[in-house]
Amino acid sequence: MGGSASLEFKEPWRNVDWRGRGKLEGDLRNTKLTSPDVSHLRILLHGPIGVGKSCFINSVDSAFQNEIINRAGEASSTSKSYTKKYTTYNFKNGNCGFLPFVMNDVMGLEDKDGLQTEDVFSALLGHVKEGYEFNPVAPLIEGDCNYVSNPSPDDKVHCLVTVVSANNISLLDQSIIDRMKTVRERANEIGIPQIVILTKIDEACPLVKEDLKKTYTSKKIHEKIYVCSNVIGAPVKFIFPVKNYCYESDTNDTTDILIMSALRHIVGAANDYVTSL
Image (tube, rainbow, N blue to C red; front, side, top):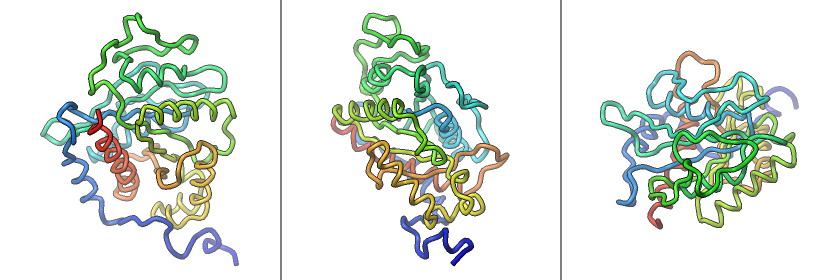
């Protein structure tokens, strides 16, 4: 049996309401923080170079602003990390200030150079000062002017998001995999919740490239989810496939729904975590 039928399950392996964009957006905009000690939920993105970490931040912003946004710089090449500084991104909530969560992007992991894993540990604990320029040769240390000695609950990370690409997850260098696992293990020791974002699903599956609504009936994406789980050790239920806004000139509901569905779980996990701070 050939054609698209052989590439697709008869029933979706995860349920999505493709008409539920409005509810998703409303729930996220109206998120009530569970702790009086924080003014926002801090989400830290990390992963290999070129997987779309900065692009995911821009895509989240685009989904809420209903226009394509490019505040977090994106690289046109995957050879070197575009992100050089520790920067906090907030998101406008219409005319009512900002959404109750912020995101930080860090320098991408490379096989030889790139981000020091110790810098991720420092960021998780809130020790990295805003605007700190990552040094691929040496990590930030206590006593440095960019080291925050007494971080507030707002400075600390409330959810760690590992970002990987669906079209090359099985080709990652073992050294990068080991560093991602080390970061995830440290977050687990601290008790910080973790979510995985699987990007570039349209590049990994022709069926999804043609129709994004087939993400959860695609056998290829289903396979990639399990490969991702095996490679980095994350439970399948915490891995969410998305398509970033990479070449579009306008937003669309289908892309927004995948982005917001993942974000709902990220924000929910972070909000649960801050009650323990």
